[in-house]
Image (tube, rainbow, N blue to C red):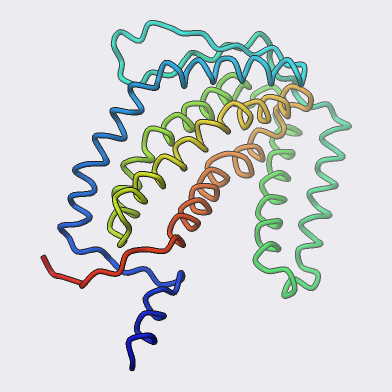
Amino acid sequence: MNASENGSKFDDRAVRALAAPRHWLMSSLLLLPASYATLAWAWNSVSLYWTLAVSSASRWVGIPIEMADVDRQGAWLAPPELQLQWTAQYPGNELLLVTALVSITAFSASFIRKERWLPVAYLVRVLAAVQLGVCGYFFASPSNFPYTAQEHLRAIFLMQTMIVKDIPLAMSLIYYPLDFTLMQKGAATLLITVYFIAILPFVLTLHASILFHASLLFVPLCFFLLGAPLMLGLFLTLYSYCASWPGVIRQISRF
């Protein structure tokens, strides 16, 4: 195999070589503290952005939501406090009936020519079954649902802030071992962190809009469609994009 063929093999974006241990360990030692120092330095600005963005987005969709700075007694990277001036309604019988019929229809449709739209058919089936189960719960015990809108939104907000704070650590474990330059690793970490900071107020407002204008009936669906699975999918998409960047061809070493 000649040199040009060798080069094309390593330039394939679907193939990523692992860096020598000294390279990715040095990347972690340099970039991980720098990432958290930058995040700590910018945290007040991040909190201010979240407060203003949530206030603006909530006014646009007609939902009273506010964020306020609270004394966290020196807690590191403490997010602002989410404040709601409303409670989500319990679903009426008409909404329960319509939602149950839609869930049954979607569940049944997932078996029709499913080979043509796998694995989406499995996802539709699972979501329809979950929503149908929630409808059954409200039919049987309409006033004993264990979650409120406030609890759900605060859990989503806490989850998103934890993701933002965990991105540098996650990147040091799964991205820094790849054979990229120090600048590429820093840029990838910055890109993903800034993206999740930017979308947090709008994802939160979307959850609030569904619960405010609909009812608590859709809390589980919000979590499964717009909660942790969505955040994981977005992270993996951005990670895949960053992993497709042209890397550095180095002589692979054991040390």
